Image (tube, rainbow, N blue to C red; front, side, top):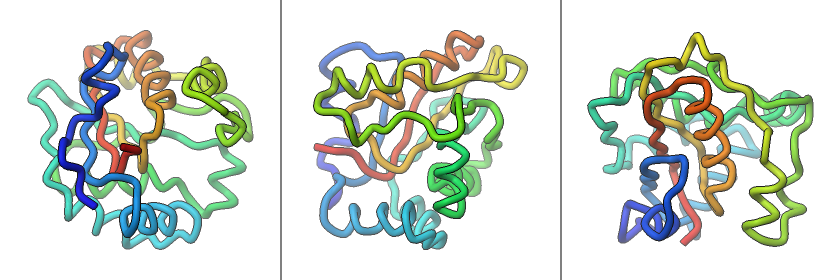
Length: 180
């Protein structure tokens, strides 16, 4: 189901480190199935299809760089790649903006288990400090973060805070889907 409002309620209701989040679909039905197939079954062609269907990819003029949300190395190996990076490359093809998958990385090999979170506060606590940004890659640049789905904004907000602390001028985000 397409999202009736491209800007999520969380972004409208309180200030976050991400200036704006735009998502094309509500994380339900066929959109959820597509995201899960991209994420867990490495159906890589779905990245281009999801991006191609999106009317919400309109980076602001002050965006210079696309940065995918990184996943822990062991998870990336198990899944055969990073779904956010696949989406970011498809967004790059559509917008002409460069992708830098090394501008942001996860700390540690496995990373936090977000499935253990019982609330938004738990999600924020679990991802606190989860990222490291390469200042030389982001300093003075506007960043478009790309991920597959946003549920609580915890991951995107923590990544944005990390990028802004490393000198990014602004951080916007785009996801294929979001929880409604």
